[in-house]
Length: 186
Image 1: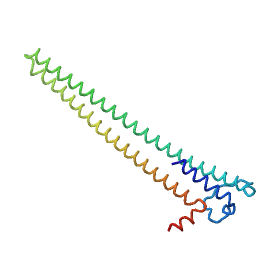
Image 2: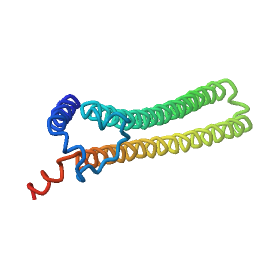
Image 3: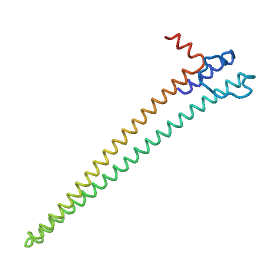
């Protein structure tokens, strides 16, 4: 698609070079800096405008690439935080399973002291359950942050697409000869 725009611009500028009086018309809305010898050589002036337009397009592309990279970074960070939260839950689950196993072994060996020891173990289980609940809450928060980050990335990407389209439309509308085509189309 970029190649077709480049070809169109090249053909458009060749038409202007062939009829250099168009370069001086009031229809030129876009303001590009012209070189001192552009009055002498309309071809050089057209080439200069093409270079300026290409630089503008490169700047827009660079900005889009930066925003896209930032969105990817945010998504990667959210995924990493989600993995860390998941690991915390897994660790808490392992600790809970280990505590439950300890409870069974303890009760088998020490049936005589069951009532005293059982209270101690119940406290450990409650603490473990509290830790699991805290880890699950952290996981929930991390997942919510990941969703928010993804939504923000999607919003940023959509906004960037709209900006690119608006810039593209503005550039095309401001090209010489475009006002006549717009008037004929209406």
